[in-house]
Length: 155
Image 1 (cartoon, rainbow, N blue to C red):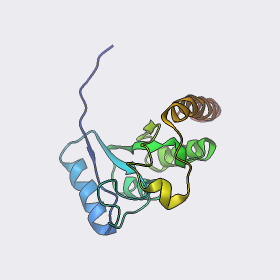
Image 2 (cartoon, rainbow, N blue to C red):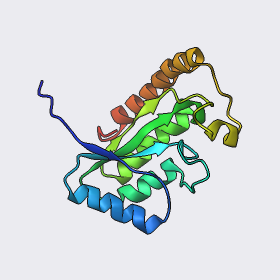
Image 3 (cartoon, helix red, strand yellow):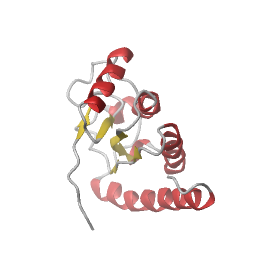
């Protein structure tokens, strides 16, 4: 098995829209392999800064690129229903022509991420986030594997 080193860029999901589009086009033109959006409802370092929602922004930006792989770095499971997330990822994969990379994580604690307070999401202890992560992976894997086997073999 050949392992190739790939390079990607994590971009802030902050407005304005036209600058975000130009940023992603430029990243692709520079030859990067992938471009990512963080999945937080507010910036971890600047909570008062305006920020767009990653899963709404992702397919829109993907439609303005043609080669570069796209995804979230990472989607925090406390904020996402796994069945809806699987369908979102599938939709973005189709919109992007098969370039979706699904990054998943247990999520940061509420001490670090103000998204919990903003959305009213319970801040699970780390042990619970890890236990739920396994369950989420199993649900998403089952839903996406069923989808791939019943369609064209794409994600």
